[in-house]
Amino acid sequence: MASVEGTVIDLWHTDIPIAEQAGYLRQGLALLSEEQQQQIVRYRQLSDQLLHLLGRLLVRRYLLETGKPLDWQEWQVSHLGKPFVKSGPQFNLSHAGTRVVAAFSTHPIGVDLEVEQSLDATMFSRYLHPAEQAFVQAAANPTTAFFTVWTRKEALLKALGIGISKQLAVHNCLLTQITYPADHSIWYIHSLPEATGYFQALATPLSNARWQLKVVPTAKLLQSS
Image (tube, rainbow, N blue to C red; front, side):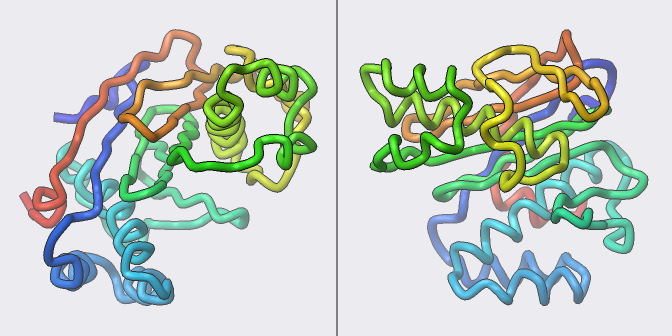
């Protein structure tokens, strides 16, 4: 059973089904509103369709297990593209590779998941705070250091709801506590353990937050009870 009380943050993971992907997509889409279905099928790749479907199904399942079945009419998207449910808990979604994560909280929350890949970290230096640049440059493995920083940065910006295109280099997200100058709100950033090849971080205004991880089988996401 999910926890929505106090300072607990629920992190639910799932992965794209290995077999019968087209069949799973059809079954999953049938659980969504017509508008939601249309949004998902606009993606060209089946993998992208599945990732976006699974994000919605994770939210649906979470609300079902907490006794608040999701009315898709309450699913809204902010002007910067952050989804929310009017009468539901705070949540945030992220996906990378074949994995989807949903973070649920009683307070605003941001989560980011990235899959490790080869890149030239110096190409992204202009998006990093000077302290973050120094951290990446001094690291034995600059790629690992970069993704550690990047997930923390995206988690914060997603929690703030301002999008990754703004203020990328302003904050030193290596810090565990950051004050957002626009409203003087305080945020806490955590890098989380992940499976090999993935990086994950979350941002929360809760100073004493704790989290619990749950892997949700894709078959369970199709159930209605």
